[in-house]
Length: 263
Image 1: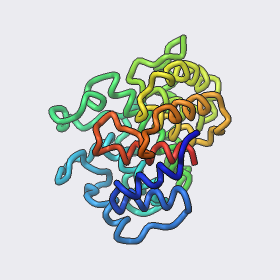
Image 2 (image 1 turned 180 degrees about the vertical axis):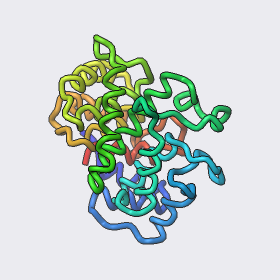
Image 3 (image 1 turned 45 degrees about the vertical axis):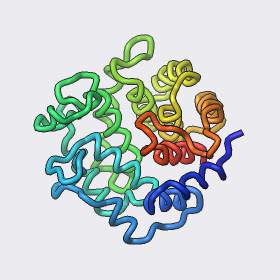
Image 4 (image 1 turned 135 degrees about the horizontal axis):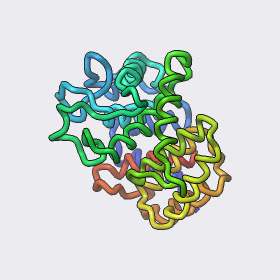
């Protein structure tokens, strides 16, 4: 069985004030203090969105989606910084419904976000489309067309066997986008392939996968979610947390993703 109390204790013991505020909001609905929100929203570019590096001047699609996930854990997607970021994402959509990072980021972007790379383009499209879909309810008319174009762009990239020409993460972000948009058959084909990978997934991947589908309303009794929960049970560390693929500094982030998936 998963020890959620142990997971919460790990975050309290090892996380910072933002991490602990995320935990309190997710588990108890306790609103964050203003200074915590200010810290979480710090560094937004003037036109919206967040740069990939502190002090950067050019907003990044990937970094902005990462920050939106943190703000979602704080119940802060309806605040002005997140809304500006979402508007910026919508404005950055290309005519074909996809997203790419700014060319000026080519030398610093990680492989999954490199401008001009088709795998990175599909990943960013699934990621940006997902966040615009789940956070767009406050201005549905403004963002519905953007989400529809993103969904169509992702659908067009799916192969006949349900696979996708991009990174593993692209599958669960795109599958969740399709699920949210009512394309259940197309999403189910992706889910079948993901379920086959779950037994070998790292804690980071399986936590993010489950949290993503949980965010679009997939039942915890669904077979993919049940498989993810089993994998999380197998990979929880003795201290209550889950280890990150990116090293100990990100273990709290992975643990929060697992808690989000299991709430």
